[in-house]
Length: 603
Ligand SMILES: Cc1cc2nc3c(=O)[nH]c(=O)nc-3n(C[C@H](O)[C@H](O)[C@H](O)COP(=O)(O)OP(=O)(O)OC[C@H]3O[C@@H](n4cnc5c(N)ncnc54)[C@H](O)[C@@H]3O)c2cc1C
Ligand code: SF4
Image (tube, rainbow, N blue to C red):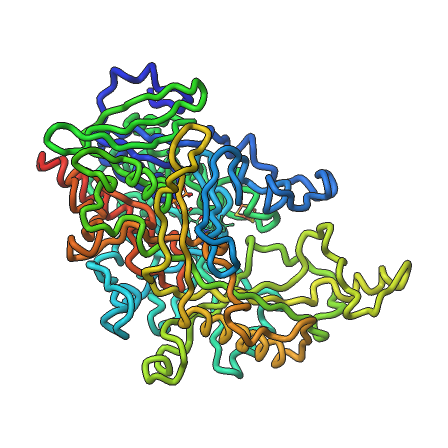
C-alpha cells in the first residue's frame, strides 16, 4: 500500500527508482507523471502531512477568528490562510541577507507542509510566450533558454487539462492561446472589472479574462484521461475516477484558505491522490533533505535527510534523484552536497549554482472610484482574485526602443465587494474627513466596493549581483548551513516599476477615480523588495553551454547524469508571467524524459 508517513524506517527495505524532494507544484507534478507511468517514487517532504478536507477552513467567517482573521507574523496572510506551517519566517530555519537595505535584500516566503505553496497560491496560471524563451535573441540581454515555446506547448496543454484552468484565447502577442477544448470557460467579469476594461481600452490597454486554475465546470473525465495518458489504461482509469471526485467551484469562499471540494489546483488535491492510487508513490513527511549522495562512479545514489519527528539523520537510495524543493531550497541542497570531488557543491562545475536568482518586478497602486459608490448590493465573490487582467501591450514600442526599459509586465487588478474584514471600512478619513456614528455607517456603505487596485507583475532580467550562497556561519535548527542572499535591481526593473505607476494612475484617472497618494515617479521607491512577489526562480539555470549553466534543457544537471531539478531553479529568465504553470509543464517534460531514459536503462 502507498503511504504518507512521518517516518521512513519501515520503508528502508523498499527499492525506489526515483527520489523526489518536495511535494509542491514541481514535486507534485514530477511524482504524478512518474507514478502514473509505473515508476516507483519516494517523495521526501520537509513539512507535515496536510488533509485538504479536514483542515480547510472554507466556511468560517472572519468574525469567528482571533483579531477577526487579521494577519499576524505567523499567519502573514490572515488567520484562515491555508499555510499551516510557513511564511516570511520559518521558526528555527533562518536565511540571511548580505544587506538589509530595501532594494538590496531578498525576502523568502516558504511553506512547510504537504503541497507546499500550492495550498495557498493565487492560482494565476499563465503560459510563457515564444519571446519569453528567447529574450537574449530579441534584445541582447539575459539568456536564451535551450528550449523554445514549441517544446513546452504540449506540456502546457497537458497541465492545463489535468489541473483545470479557466481563461480565453485572445490571439494577443506573446500571450499564447491554448488548443480548443483545453481551457475551461471564464467566469463573468465583476462590475469594477468591467469598468476598468472599458476605460483601460480607451488608453490602449487590453483587459481580458485571466487564466486561473479553478474549475468553472467539472473536468471531462470521459475524454481527458485518454488525451493525457494515451495507451496507459491504468493511468486513464485512475485519473477518470479521480476527476469525478473534483467538484466545480461554487464561487463563495476565499481560495487562499484552500479548497476541500478540490475545485482549484493544490498538489495534495490534484497531483498526489491519483499518484498515490497507483501504488507506486510513497511519501515521507517531516523529512528535511540536506544532501544528495554519490556512488563511487560519481552518480547520485540517494538523499540524506533529518527526520524531524525523531531528529535522526536518515539516508534513502534510488536510481535517480529529482530536486523539487522550490528554487532556492534545491540550490541550497546542492550547495550543501559538498565532497572532495565537488568542493563547491554538487553540479557546480560551471560555478553558476546559486547565480541569477530572479523574482517578479512588483509595484502597486490603488484608487477610489465615485462611479462605483452606492452600488445595489449584489454577490461579487467569484474566484479568489480578479477575473480579468491586462497582458503586456507594448511589445512593438519596446522593440522600437520607445521605452526606457527592456521587458514587459502584466497588470493584475482588484475591485468589488468581498467578504468584509477588520480593515474593510478602515482608513476612509481621506475621503470622509473623519466621520462617526451613523454618518460613519453611511460612509462605510457608500464606499464599500468602490475601490480598485492594480498590481504590476513584470519581468526581471537576470544579473550578476542577484544570487545566493551558503552563509559561512549561520545554520538552521537541524545544523544545516543556510542561504545568504545578495540582491540588486537594474535600471530596467526600476524604470519598469515607474512605468507601472504611471499606467495605473492613467487607468484610475480614466475611471474618474482619485488616489490617496500620487503615483511614485521614482522606480527605486516604487519597486517591491526582491522575493516579495514570491515568484523566485533561477539559481540553477538551464542552458545549452555546460560552462554557463547548471542543467540542460531537461533539467538534467550537466555534472551528474541521474540528478535532475524540476522546480523554478532552472528558469533561464523570469518572464512577467507567473511561474507556476511553467514549472509544472517543465516538470512533466522532465519526468517524461526520465521515464524514457529509465525504460532504455540509460539511468
Ligand atoms: C501568496 C502566494 C501567491 C502566489 N500566487 C501565485 C500565482 O497566482 N501564480 C503563480 O504562478 N504562482 C504563484 N505563487 C508562487 C507559487 O506558489 C510557486 O511558484 C510554486 O508553489 C512553486 O512550486 P515549487 O514546487 O517549486 O515550490 P513549493 O510549492 O514551495 O513546494 C516546495 C516543497 O518542498 C518542500 N521542501 C523545501 N525544502 C525541503 C527540503 N530541504 N527537504 C524536503 N522538502 C523540502 C517544502 O516544504 C514544500 O512543500 C504564489 C505564492 C504565494 C506564497
Ligand atoms: S472559490 Fe471555488 S475554487 Fe476557490 S475555494 Fe471556493 S469553491 Fe474552491
